[in-house]
Each structure stands twice: as structure tokens, then as C-alpha cells.
Image: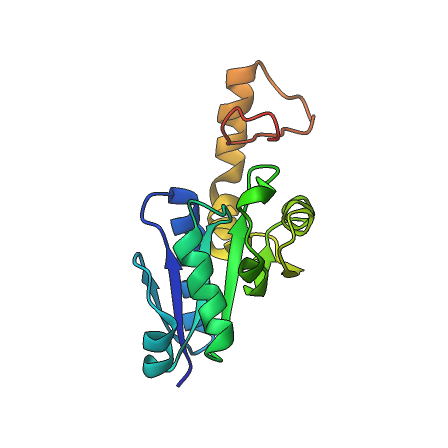
Length: 172
């Protein structure tokens, strides 16, 4: 049976949510999948027969250990992808040549561009997914929620209602 270990930090809710989504999809495809909130070295992944996805920010200082695991997986022939996010331009003086050996997948073209500008290797872009079960729930309760929201903003009268849930960071 195929095994997958998704490694991430327990500190970031958004990374935990995406990691849980990946595990859910992997299990639906027949994988034995788990989340680890600890760093698992490549030799242990190989011993367990597990491939890996590392879900972390890409920061040459903060994420050093995670990047090292991703690089070691390449050397140890352990299938591994580092799904990395970034919040702007990386400080290139901290990017070391060995970091470009990690196989990074970016969640957007913006992130891909910032990572490649810093000299890192991005093998693709995979946007965050959509949980179809949640979409189905939204369809069930959508009309009620729309009326409730329209009442709060003073009526919509057939207009498009656009709602966003995010922090106030300028890029959002």
C-alpha cells in the first residue's frame, strides 16, 4: 500500500488545514496517510516506505531544518515535495546553494516568482484546493446565509454578493 506523510508545523492553522485536506484526499485515493507535526528525517521515511509532502513557509532561516529534510529526501531517493509559501521577497543572502536541490511546489505564480528570484527550484504551481463537501454544505444553507448577509449590508436586490474572509494584509 502507498504511504504518505504530510509534515507541517502545529503553529499555523492555515498550513494545518491544507495538510488535513491533502491527507483526506490521499486516503480517498487509497493511501495510508498521516500528518506529522514533527520533522521526520529522510532515512526514517525511507524505512517506513513513505513519501512526503512538507507544508511550510519557505524562509531560509526559519525553515532551515524543513528544507534540509526536503533536500535529503532527494539525495535518499525518497519521493518528497516541499509545498512552500512565502510572504514576499526572500533575503537572498541567506539562501544557500544546497537549498535549490529541494523540490518545491508553489501555491501561486506570485510565490513561484519570488522563490525562483531567490534561486530556489520550483517544479510547479498547485493552487490550494476546494473541499467539495463544504461546497455542498454551502449550497444547502446558501440562500439563508445570503439573506442574512444582505440584511446586514442593507439589501442586495439581485446584485452579486462578494464576501472575503482574510486578514488585512495589503496583498489580500
